[in-house]
Image (cartoon, rainbow, N blue to C red; front, side, top):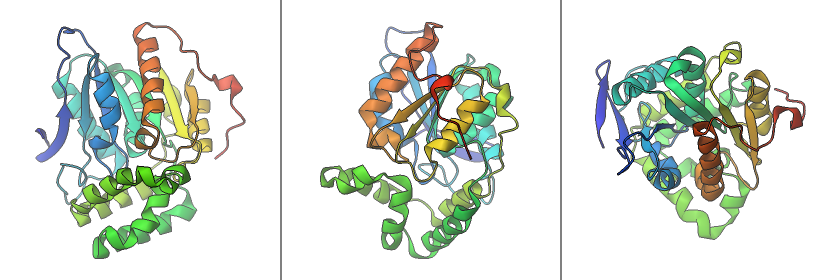
Length: 290
């Protein structure tokens, strides 16, 4: 896995390169969710790499990026992503972020919109963490540090995966792979990453300035960032489009890979054509709360 040095930190990423015969292909940059890595977009990258250059970044202490003493706050991670984008492609890129990757994507779009061609937000939030969850997440982070993944896997999985995939024995390898990959990460780095998410600052006061085409999608059974959090984003970003994914929890790219890939493909094609996508409009949303 290649790395790029950003402020002395080797940030890991993957890059499919420019598709053969498509020298003008746009770049998609994928930002993963907490306790994962860029690998969580594998199904989407596999489908889209024929038409786009696909790049994924691993946040500090996760995936292939080593743990660092600090820098786990969302603003620093946004700076890491910004540096990677500037190093890889001088043209605007499509950003696709899930959960933590969405926290970063919102900051990029609000502050550096000229570098983005579109923004896709999956299972994420523009606000701070819900106070009732902060203590639980910090306790889980402490347990991860001292015990590792295996003893508390059953406590973490319901936050990340919906009831449908957890009840389907044929899908167990997906959750097994997540647990195996997480167990190979530095525990101190994972703990700091969890704290960075739990203590994140709201950007709701910034995102009305976002002007790039924006798609906001969420699993209907997402426990970590429920649909009302996505609806709130749609209410704040002018022209944002909303999509609810049935039978899906927080990790939509792995729980419903075909549905997410199809949705993303339609959206990106509509942006590239500069045409509005036929999807649920803001006017069709229920009143957003939270």
